[in-house]
Length: 392
Image (cartoon, rainbow, N blue to C red; front, side):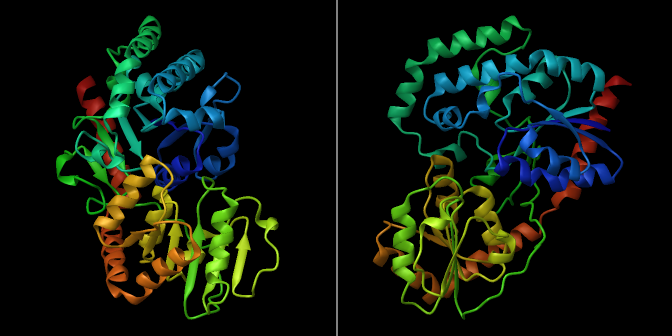
């Protein structure tokens, strides 16, 4: 089986796929991975053939553009169309050369889905967040203002759709691109238990559980209670980190804080607080008792896999959906503000109420009961087989 795989330039969307890529390659399949130079090494380490998408005026590489996508549907559509058309000639040449049996693309790497539509190749969506349909999308809290704004921008969106149609992409509207239905073959990197509204998704959706990396460098547990704080690259608010340090300065807790950047800006730290630019998150979570997180899907999944209850501090609608589901299942609580006393209160509530730990363990068990990369590989083999059967 030969697979063409498309992904966006983001660690959180690339990393979960690599275990499956490795499983496919080890089973004797070819994976040709369309991505960006930043990710080349780890993609090739997984055994895939790397196909670079750099240098094609691909506008989604721009961080400011990426930040605006979630707030402006017309802009997001223009960016999607421009990026798809920038890659069009290169992708056409590669698809003609490879003749893949199946195309897999990240759920927001829409150019992969469009390529599958254009060349009538079986398609599988790789969903590293929750799967969203009209039921589960309520978790994103799109209110009437957002809906009204989208309706006002529809003429601009239709103009962008015409650009795709002129290049041979068989799309009627924006929802053909951005929305998967129950006929769409989909791999979701979580469990049915953790997935909101799981009973509304068909058996075309395979919930394979999160992709958990092995621990590379163990971390020493130096206190009875270890608190891990990481906000990814989203929250670069110095006041937040300062307040966390103030909250735990006089406590007996071991506090490990991963900041992403600016870790050197904080001096005069007590011995119990350790600040890093980055950590082996699997190693830290394996010794943690509480995890204060921005609620990125990967971070939450990793924390819950290690049965660590969470303090939830989401920064985007997508992270808000992850936080809401975690709180619904009783494995975490929302941080109400970044005031030091609120942070301490949230930690104490988690530590004093065993229910949070027990509920995190239930979610962890659901992850471990999933079929993982092996189930996903068998699913992809079946999808490719459907194509072969149609050809016979």
